[in-house]
Amino acid sequence: MKVETISHESGDLLPLLLDDDDLPIPAPNEYVMSRRYLSHNTLTRNLRELSVLYKWLHSNDINLSERLSSKYIFSEAEIKGSLVEALRRDQESQRKIKKIVITPNTFNQRLTTVRKYLGWCFDVELGCMPYTDSKFEQVRENKKRILHWLESAFMNSPPTNKGLRKGLNNLETEFLLSILDPSATASFGRDPAVRFRNYIMTTIMLFYGLRPGELLKLKVEDIEIGALSCIRVTRKPPDKNDTRKANPQIKRNGRVLPIDNPLFAKNLDLYITEWRDVLEERSDRNSEYLILSDEGDPLSQSSITNFFQRLRKKYPSKLPLHLTAKSLRHTFSYQMERNLREEGIGEQKRSEILAMLRGDSSLDSQLIYIAQEVEEQARAALKKYQQNLIIEDVPW
Figure 1 (tube, one colour):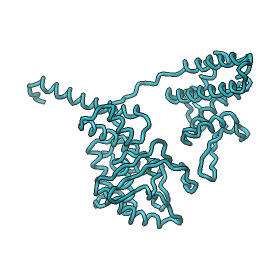
Figure 2 (cartoon, one colour):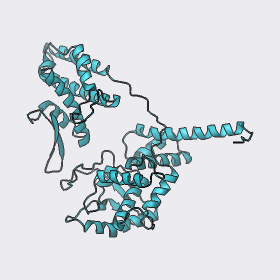
Figure 3 (tube, helix red, strand yellow):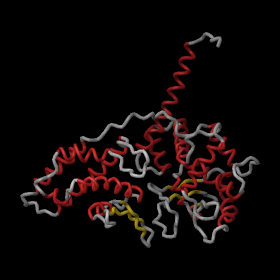
Figure 4 (cartoon, helix red, strand yellow):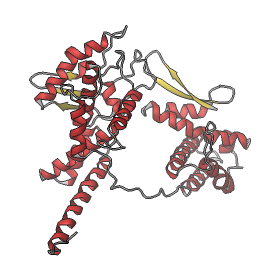
């Protein structure tokens, strides 16, 4: 049993769950097609989670469709004692050392997907039955019972350290920009075009909080340099000409981000008009994308990951271990939250502004940055309070 992705001529990517004979399994694939508004990566993860359910059904010789409409519905022992335990087990067969169980978060994700899917299967079954059918109420009660058993199996995740710093501090940010500055003599890298590319892609993520997928999806036409300069982050249909193995995606809201820094605008324009052309000439194909690889093709997400790994390895005492593309987004968010707070803007409004700038659809995603700033202010207040109490100088 495996998940394979079908690439259509339009550029759309459709994951399919195949059985041991490499034939599509109808029900879970129909379920995924009903959720096409979600990203390809999310749908692929959902099918992998459902594959655990279907492996369990196959090993226990259970026909799901027959069980849904039969009076011999799943028992509590089958759901809680067998299915739930199967969802807890690690399914990775290629590891040398196999885990006995998976993490609570992974288990809860599997359980959520399986629960939603079984609810959908029951709804399909009920939709095919007339309301006057004697089995209608029985199937509906079975649905409530099974979903309740699954809901009661959720695990509490271990507490996380929300105060753990995920972004860069001011010194680390200044050092990062200094070693990537293409005009500096000690700039990281040898190829001038690649150095300029690295500087531009890092500053875009740091100054605007873009996700790596959003950065890699930017095209030259999305950059406007002029009286009202801006970067346009917009959701686009799949590009059938994009040959990158892991196709970058803009998962959430688009936005228009103004370019108010004259130096950044000048460097971005210089990259587009001069250094990007140098990179593009190294490839046999023309590209519309803004960020190109050393060979002139659209840059991949794995290349960004590798780039930050090399930086951490070269400057271990100056750059933190958590330096990644995502840490730049966290740095942007923490700094924006601090600036908004210093401007006297209320918490609700700060959440709305952060969500708009970050392209998030939920305000809950901003709470971690508000909590971080509150915690730092609390530490500063505590330090000041203690300093005022202890007047004596300590000899050591």
